[in-house]
Amino acid sequence: MKPLINDWLANDLAHNWHPFMQMKDFETYPPKRIIRSEGIRLFSEDTWYYDTISSWWCNILGHRHPALVQAMVDQLDRLDHIMFGNFTHDGAIELSKKLVEITPNGLNHVYYSDNGSTAIEVAIKMSLNYWHNLNQSKKTAMVSFSGSYHGDTIGAMSVSGVAQFNSVFKPLMTPSICLPNPSNNESAAIQALHDYLKTHADQVAAVVVEPLLMGAGGMQVTTPNFFKEVRQLTQQFNVHLISDEVATGFGRLGSMFASQMANVTPDFLCLSKALTNGQLPLAVTLLTSDIYHAFYADFDDNKTFYHGHTFTANPLGCAVANETLAVLDSIDWTSNVNHLHVKLSAEFHELCDRFRFLSNPRAIGAVAAVDVTSTTHRALFKLSQLAFDYHLTIRPIGQSIYLYLPIVTTSEECDDILDRLNQCLTYAEQMILF
Ligand SMILES: Cc1ncc(COP(=O)(O)O)c(C=O)c1O
Image (tube, rainbow, N blue to C red; front, side, top):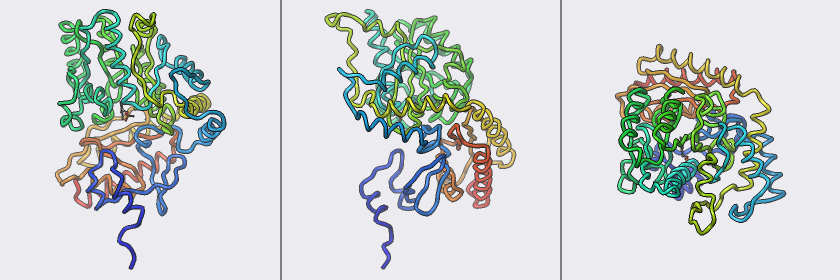
């Protein structure tokens, strides 16, 4: 008799706990077993899917880019992982030099870690430690905005304002101040920040922002002006600004970094994900010389920054990151993102005219989103499962669905993706999902 489920599936479900998933759902909707990736496509044994969320917002240049594969192979021929405590290596030296060159002026130093959450943890701890080193130990509070997301470790959660993810863990969190969501009303958020800093700046270490696009909080777009005004207030009231561009850095929004679009130099810039095109885990926290020099002292002054991760500046990760930046230098990704943006923006507006259950179209760079009104039980989850039949990877966030395309997506691929999304939504409507 044929087994009811394949061995791989039985073994997967017996042992693997997939992130952000209700494992029981896999009884009805089994995970897809991906065996190969190429360009913007992921292949299983018998079908394929467009990577329309860029493998959790990482991939910009397509999968298994030949130059990146070669960079990994070459690196393995020379040097694998070593500790970055006493040792250094050419990959990290080259990468830091390049990152300092391409990020806003003034961010002269690089602290490595291995994922977005750790990049935020580094910034938060370094900010607090900076004020301590300056004998301003009362400045410990972190300020953030509702709807922003900065990761799942405890410090990062403490400055995240997405209640759905974090409410259970509140007892573990450090106290922080959550201001109104800027995507609802930017001037109200700015006013709230002004009012808070005016009376409490002597207790605040830093303000943490996810500029231009608040991803996990529902793909909400904010303006460069909002970010600029946050920078002005943080300067005026002498608190740090931490810019979290973990999900958006390296071209996704149409320019290399949100900081450049807003003409802002933050005190800390956190980057990860597309830094290696998502091929290996690597993250950086860039910081100003002012911060660096608050720690630079004789050992006995006790100003050393005691934070680090085993895989800091992993040489393989650095090699892939260096090659990612070289590829970005060699292609005209800006025009392509602009082109994708025009298409996505127009089509997402049209989707809202075509389907009565869609509203609030928005797009920035290679990202577009709409809100979905549903009355059926778990309609968005069912839509995301249906989308696989149309070769699309759709993971709803709250009441929104979105596309988050690699920046090398071609015009034809984008048209095909939009066409499939239309067909999928039409079928979903016929099935009375909405
Ligand atoms: C804006 C932002 N910051 C931080 C993180 C955390 O990154 P990681 O999942 O690599 O810890 C994410 C993850 O999606 C993110 O979107």
